[in-house]
Amino acid sequence: MGKVIASWSVNLFADCPACECLIDLTEYDDEAFMNGERGAPLEQREDVEITCPECEHEFKCDFDW
Image (cartoon, rainbow, N blue to C red; front, side, top):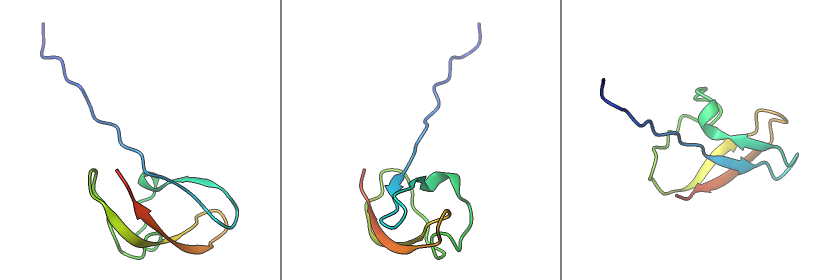
């Protein structure tokens, strides 16, 4: 029998304050979406500039683990 492997799955959800769309920030690999910023699991970040992929509203959010 082979080795059993467990895989991590991480999501980073935010609600757009304009259209109230629930956004999973991990689904987007577009640098423009997060203005060139990147986040990592377990990393606390503040004032990350986000552009909503649905309505293009720009807002800031904090990454909280």
